[in-house]
Image (tube, rainbow, N blue to C red; front, side, top):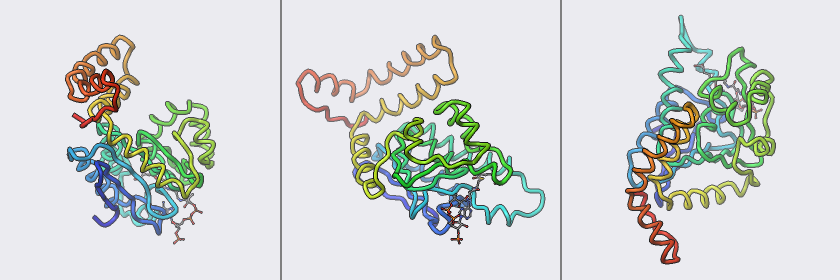
Amino acid sequence: METILYDVADHIATITLNRPQTLNAFTDQMIAETTATFKQAARDTAVRCIVLTGNGRGFSSGQDLADVQARAGDFSIGEHLRHGYHKLIMQMVTLEKPIIGAINGVAAGAGCGVALATDIRIASDKASFILAFSKIGLIPDSGINWLLPRMIGYGRAYQLAITAEKLPAAQALEWGVVNDVVPHDQLPETVTAWAHKLASGPTLAFGLTKRAMLKAWDTTLPESLEYEAYLQEVAGRSADNQEGVLAFLEKRTANFTGK
Ligand code: T3D
């Protein structure tokens, strides 16, 4: 792979967007490589937590605008989204392992969408979110219209979209866009601590929780209750459930295996 770095250690997969000279703008190759790598991490049973971050001073500046400028003929943005960003976003939100976004710098345009598609977001105090789309006459995409209003409400989301103003990390924390903000130089150790904690947790239950919450957004309470019962049946038969109950009764820390 040429546009990302990939590393697996201690059950933690780390994906680093790696086009720092453009603040990690997405080319078609980077979209494809990131999607394929998330798929690989999903299939790898040794991986129990995934970290997504950016190399250099940006997380991602979104679609590479030099590539946009170079498009020839009757280019279909709709098809480009369907075949690229949609696959990436769906791969992330349906991946049944926790994804930590280590937001090291600016997350703009589709880069913001990708950041929002992570499950736990830990931001550097130098990070920010920018819905840059309106500055180039576009609307938000890459799942932002679905994800962001659910996180911060329609009014704030619409404001960010039409003004393209920067949402600094501190404000993002206040609005619930990120889970924590830490001094920039403490981001790696904070994310590593989170990742180790999640990678030693009940991975199956973490994955099913993600599925239950995602589905609940679009269902009625009775439907959600029924789906919870169905998924809890699965979790309740897991080795980690047995181990968790036993560990509680034996007054010791549970040794989860993710199964
Ligand atoms: O298929 C489709 O096309 C539809 C999909 C659309 C999805 C989208 O993401 S649309 C939105 C695309 N992104 C943007 O419009 C953001 C453009 N970038 C910026 O507004 C700013 O760069 C930032 C606010 C993100 C950061 O500003 P700043 O001042 O910290 O950095 P900078 O100096 O602007 O950028 C540093 C370098 O990165 C610079 O290159 P240089 O001059 O050092 O050689 C700049 O050109 C480059 N860069 C930044 N963003 C992009 C980029 N190069 C290509 N594409 C970019 N998106």
